[in-house]
Amino acid sequence: MMEQGSAIRRLGAAFGSAAKQFVRRFTLSKAGGVALIFGLSFIPLSMLTLCAIDFHRASTVRMALQDALDAASLAAARTQSATTTAQIQTIGANVMAANMQTFNDTVITTTTFTLSGDGTVTAHAAADVTPLVANMFLGGPMQVGADSVVKRASKSLEVAMVLDTTGSMSGSRITDLKSAANDLIDLVVQAVQTPHYSKIAIVPYSQAVNAGTYVTTARGAIDANSTLITGATKANPVVITANGHGRAVGDKIYITGVSGMTQLNGKVYTISAKTTNTITLQGINGTSYSTFSGSGGRVYCASPGCQYYGYTAADGSAQVQQVSNCVTERTGTNAYTDVAPSTALVGRNYPDSGNPCITQTFTPLTADKTALHNVITGLSASGSTAGQIGIAWGWYMLSPNWGSLWPSSVNRPAAYGADELIKVAIIMTDGEFNTNYCNGVIAKDAASGSGASSTHNNCNGTNGSAFSQGIALCNAMKAKGIIVYTVGFDVGSDASAQNLVNSCATDAQHVYQPSTGTALKDAFRSIANDIMKLRIAS
Image (cartoon, rainbow, N blue to C red; front, side, top):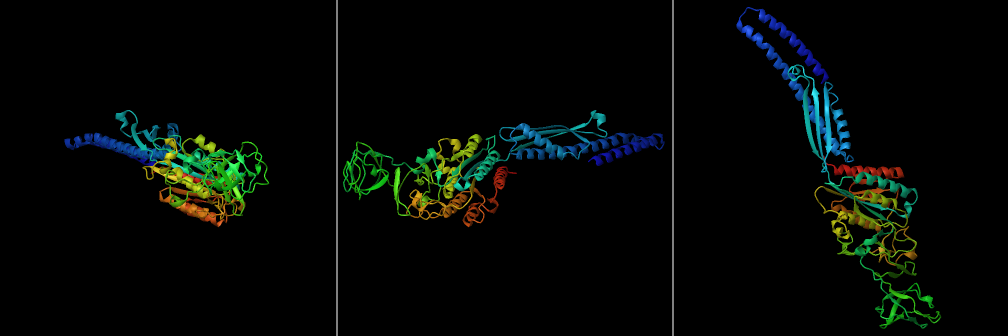
């Protein structure tokens, strides 16, 4: 453009000199009046021609200015991290200057970019163009301007992070996971939540998922009723007195807190006979027991759905465990659906003391970055790997069918297929899913790493292997339009884990297999950037 301007100026100078000579010749000529008139008209015609060149130059600069402003406005709007007018101004001005740098004979006098609350970027630019002739009339440079309005093309985001916090994640691994997850939160959750929002839910898992205050709604109420024991015989069988106990023949009961005849405590019994106020303990010979002393101890039910559950372990031993706030797999026809818990409850959890319910509860969708960071900071590593339960709850965080579980509307996911909405699940694991359940206790056919046979129920997993359940849940979730990313952290040659991360993801481009802590952080950042690209449309 600079060379073009110089050429035009040289042309104008030459044209002006020729015009002067032409006029002088014609004014001295005696050839006639027509020649004189033509000669005199040549001056204004020449000036008009040069002015036309000036206005053409101004029009060219204005079009270039408009193109540059449009490009700068679009670049500023697409920069999702820019949430203030000052940030938008910096980005827009930089892009504008880069796009106009070839117009050396043009001075940009004004460049303004503003960001409104609805995500609209409004821009204005003005420039001075040095004319060849027109300044005789304008008294200075020619001014051109351009305006641009770009609406931030965006979508709302609902993201569920399903995070492995099992025992194998202890040490530097859990530290690296915290750093990676916190980075993703900072990149995905935006300061401006209107007109589009960006929310994250967090589901930590190990041997199960801790449902916290939502546990009763999710799994159903637990029978925690107990009856005071006022007497017990040293007979064969033992007969205890518990007025109005309400139990039936064949029921299992759990006794605790008895004084004197303490041999009864901490065990599960089957009722072989009963009256309104007495219970006969099947096969229990108490003739050698201590004498019951005073009123003490209580009777609890000990079947699935009760506070205590007595069962025969895989090694044949008798075991009893107390229910926890963790939840396990949903069984039956809705095992792999996201119907509301009011239609189908999830499973209970009776954990062994060596593999207890994890302490971290899940967090439903929220845009509260401080709260999300606090959850991540509190993560700790322990327990075996029931990743299928984590996947299920990641889905529930995004399912509109589970919205009623959350007391606040801000935590409730939108409907599937809602306009301008993306639902994303990020499933992270560092190894094989090895923990499946039967009646809320780790199943007999659970894989290695899930505990000793004395802590497993003497029945196989109701829904099959943890791996097959995970795949089924991922497929069902993807069928609902949820985008699934998987992160296999240092899974190496573990064929089962490799198969799961590859099968669960939306496609191969959504699979990450970092082998180091640094690579794990890079993977989470890459996922976050990819999500933000999905969010911002062209």
